Image 1 (tube, chains in turn red, brown):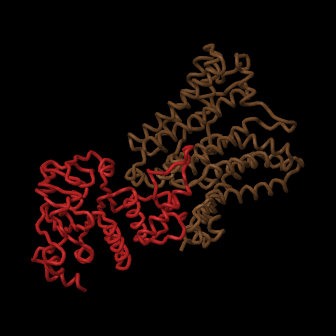
Image 2 (tube, helix red, strand yellow):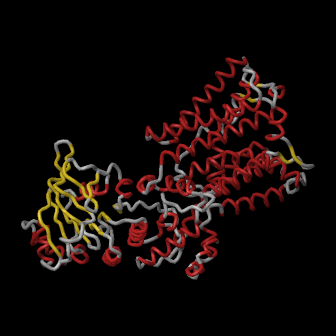
Image 3 (cartoon, rainbow over the protein chains, first blue to last red):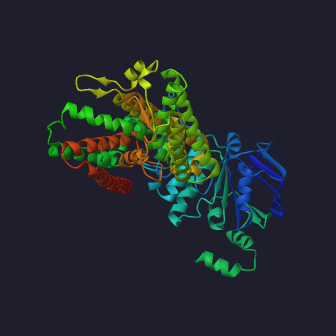
Length: 259
Length: 347
């Protein structure tokens, strides 16, 4: 694939484990995420996806192991610290306020100000429009409340916001799970856009079909461990589905997925 | 709007109908209501004074009384919280300033300063209790309401053996305070605190719509978790709002003290609901995240017009609160309907 051996990974985990009391949520996770690629983390419910995201984004601190950002060791105490290091996470709730307008949401917490300290609304609107257009999102009225956007558009606003505020690593938590086929397609397009801008995208999903469409590298998570690693072009989609299903219930699941 | 500054892209903005834009304003319902109420009382007026400048000077005094606190209460409600102690705080602060001057020999201005600081502290306590216990602000501030109500009566009786604090007009500094806070202006005798009310409305509107803090108010009321995840200091924002509300109530209490030259221990009780009515009539959602300061002031104007208009119309004033109840219901109904239409009309 791409020259993964020569570029420095944007984000790397080395033998990371996370325990909650006696429960081992993650065990010896080693993975790396390269700039300008989409890394998919697949797993069923309870596989440890949420814990992994939270460990990457600074919500949890790993019990063991190292987290490296651009080759340097980091220890995030909070999501804000992770954000400062360029790791932005778009959680499932998207962190948008439904009743607030698109541009106010876009700049929430990072509002641009004029020289006298007031909100620079025209600048905010302009940047918001440009950034959304750059992602291929055409929202005609930035004053409309975010709650009136479709699920895909809201996802797009959240992604565009993360990209604009300097994300080098963009972690997407199940961005397509609540969406229909068409909306999912739109979000997958945004993932490609972000990738094209040189961002390292971490795409967490339980849907191997969505992952297969955009992923460059695939990690399979099962019961807190990484069980498989695939690289784009070196396997068939069926292998991914099969590995995820764990073999036993494969026929039934595959049937359901293909229908 | 000022969006036209984004020159190359605003051809899309013109597609949004002016009506939708208007419907999206939170204060629209209140404005229509104010026009209707004004027309109603101007028509029903038996004195011939309601629609005159004398009438205006009269009802703006009532409106200012409620508006001075209703505006910060609106901000607090947009931020997703209630303050049921705002009414009784008017009494508490009036009594405190009165006692500090008449019983403890402070002159007027230092007493005013101390009272405002004390109110800030009460607001801070409200905010910290709400945020650290996670209890609804409705309950926490209701407890504060009863506590202050008890303290007002208890302390006043203990120190003065009566239920009022009087004789404030003999305190040094009273005259200048009276001039700034409670004098009457012009030949129509407009109350000077109407200007304070308008100033508070303008400042609150600028804060709400044109500052970073204003954006945070909408965010913490609209979705607390989303606000926190995007880096908005939720605690600080809400505590500041509680403090502003308390300080505004104290400001009103001081105005009342200076105007009436005395303070009853029961002053302000019941006003907390009038403040909330103003905000709700003015388009604030009870669930937070939406509303305006101007709307709250229009709501206060409606109450002012109703209080005066009912007596000018020669109706029995016992019915005033029935009228307020109906106004509240209709206004919130209209607000909800227009708000829904504005959002539904988006596509």
